[in-house]
Image 1 (cartoon, rainbow, N blue to C red):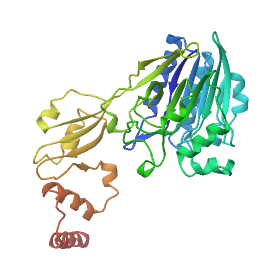
Image 2 (image 1 turned 180 degrees about the vertical axis):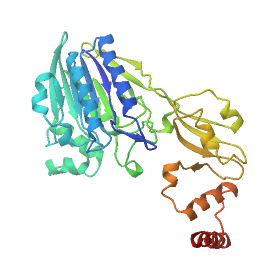
Image 3 (image 1 turned 90 degrees about the vertical axis):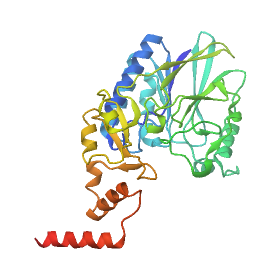
Length: 372
C-alpha cells in the first residue's frame, strides 16, 4: 500500500491577524495533485484539521472540497481529531461517509478504532488514536491509575492489544519526547504531555500529528508529517514536505519526503532602511527588522512598497535593548494616546519608560487640545 501522511492542517488559521485560507487552499490542491502523480492508495490525516473546535464556514467548506477531491480520486482517507478539533464535529456523518472510504474517529469511549484494509501482501490494520487527555481516558478506564499522558496511552494500548505479527499502522496526535518544537504548537507547561516513543514499538509505521516541524522520532517509520504551511516565524528556516510511505510485506516500509511549495513563503528580513528598500518586491509573508538609529516616522509605509504582506515590523538599534515590535495601524487604534506616547518614547530612549513629568506634560497638552 502507498499512502500520504498529513497532519496539522489548521484550516482557518490566522497568522499575525492575516487569514491563510487562500494559502491553505493552494497547498491542498498540491496534495491532490500528488495523489494522482504518485498513484497513492490512501491519505492519513493525523489531527488538527481545523484551527479551532468551532471552525468558520469557509474552513469547513475547504476541508469538504479537499476530502471530496480525495474520494473522487479513489483514495481511502483516515482522519483523527487533534487538540484543536472537536471530536463530535469531526465525526459528523462518519457512518455515512464510511461507505465512500472516508474513516473518521468518533468520540472516545474506551476502544481504539481500527480498520483493516487489504493490499497485494495481505491485510494492514490501521489504528486511529485521536488526541486524548488523561481525564478523558480515566473516565472509561476507572480501574486504571492514570494521571499522565504516558499512563493514558499505555492504558489504551493495554485495552486494545496489537498483534505484532501483522502489519500495523497507528495514526496518533500526541507530543513525543525528544522531538523538536516551534512557536506555533500548544503544549502543556513543563512538558507534562510528553510520551515516550518506545511504547509504539509494535507498529510498523506511526503517523504523528501535533508538532509542526517535519521530523522522524527515533526511527524513520515513526514521524511527524508537520504542518503543510509555516504557521510562525520560528518555522521560517525549514522546508515543508509530505511523507510518501510505501508499505510492502511485514518489515518492508520505505519513506520518501515530497516537498511542498507554498503560495507565499514565511521569512525574516533585516537591515538598514537603505538596504531594505533596495530589496526586490515580494509578496511573501515577512517580518521586517530595521536597524537604523533614527528610522523615519513613515518607515513602515515606505517598506510596504517592497513588502506588501509585511506581517510584523520591528526596530532594533542601540536605543532599544531588545526587539521592539512596532504595531500595525489596526492594533494602534486599540491603544490610548498615552500608551502610544509611551511606546514612541521607548523607541527613542533605549527602552526607558517616560517619567511622571513627561506624562504630566502630555496630559496638560491633551487637555488644552480638548478645550480648544
